[in-house]
Amino acid sequence: MCSMASRRFILSLPSECWAKDMTVDYEYYTGVYGGNRIPREDFGFCEKRAAALVDMITCGRASQAGTDEVNMAVCAAAEVCFSEDAKGAVQSERVGDYSVSYMSRDENSAGGKLRRAVAPYLLKTGLMSRAV
Image 1: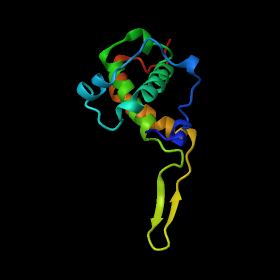
Image 2: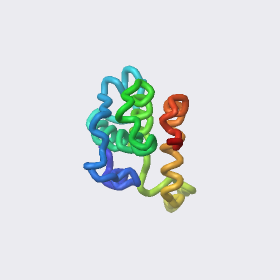
Image 3: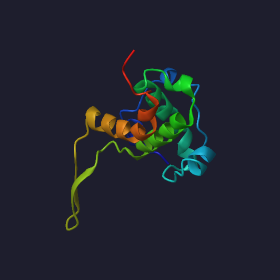
């Protein structure tokens, strides 16, 4: 189950900002996208946040496009949402007298992961272009 800490990750957009026209179900995620990282019970939450972020990255054009590339990008973004840990990545770990140090997270690193995840699907569509 998604921890509350990972839900507080940068992807915590208000629900009114969630893209309502883009929906990818769990069967699409596992069958077409081939995903297996997100458990079924956590997928709905991650998918809604991911759809909102993909729509934000594309300046609102993704929810209007409704293409397979957009659906694949939503799946990739959902995996980023699910895998991000509020503590950040482990920087070092010691076993004797157990000690763990975490790298600090900032919005740029989280945003970079998200953009790298969706870029293979959206770049060729022109949806990531900022041109008007």
